[in-house]
Length: 463
Image 1 (spheres, helix red, strand yellow):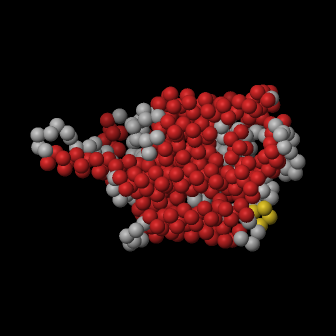
Image 2 (cartoon, one colour):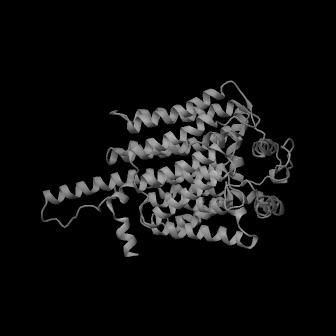
Image 3 (cartoon, helix red, strand yellow):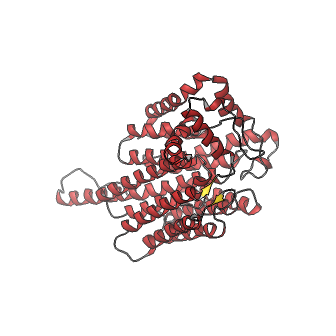
């Protein structure tokens, strides 16, 4: 252990830990977006990326601030699938789809200029990049009519049924492509609730899901801007990372296909923003809504419960809120709710094109592998234990990545969510490190002004 600690304290390693983590996350998302199902190349990139993240975490080299060169390189890597494999399949393409793809690439270009360019004011470029990414996501919905996927068909019909007083968990769905799910609404209720405004106002559930994601990202950007004014000038780098996270390659397809990872991400970003603003009790609300959106979000509760600035009382409150959102549908038809949201996934057959190790394992080893990799992620996250929000968010991404690596069906949307949270964890470190640096500088100034004071400078800040 001492050798590991000395190895981790090597200046070069300590300085580049954040950069290596960012590039690993960017490589995973680019690979799974370029080819969204299993290939040998995908498997190699995912395995290598997860190994890098595990080693960096074990050595406590993350979360740290990535170098600007690494941010620029990660953004360039993300442009590759956007140019060569844009989201143009299984939809009726409208004339504005190329514009949407172009705006997504423009967002990356603006971020590259913001992080590498010789500009004095970086915040306007970051805001323009966010607006460009948001416009791309709105247009990709408008220009991608009737996706040939069960998710969108189910949400469209379920929201219509809900508006007519029907229970979506009792519904059967028509027009679903052959071989896909048509006899179960297998999502937790908040996605349905979040989708209703888009269905009512604009005729498409995807607008409602997208609104949640963009609202969460906007809240976090505002929180970082506010903290940046209170500390030092490093908030723009953190904001670049947040906008990068919500415009990663694959995000356009997540929005286009109506995958509800966008809702999970928006809720978690809102929770992170509120904690960053020292409103941890308010963060209970978006965390509870995330729990009522997707089943495996429950995996992150141990991390949030053990984190001192959130704690088990708030986790219990968030769990209670999530349960309260689900309760009306549970009471309406307990058997059907359980069958669609739990038993459906337990009985779900493995897919040979899954981006995970499940299919390589013998039958008796599969469930233990899921449990073991998830437990390993908890152990790694425990290595990061401190009071920093960055460690909590980065650990959340690690847990999702470990689960994706072992799960029977893991695809682009699951991997994108995990990598988005890893990048947001690095962004949180940038903001918190700047605040600690300012506190340390003020403590040093006060100690010089009042030599007899017992007040000491702040804790040293990791680069």
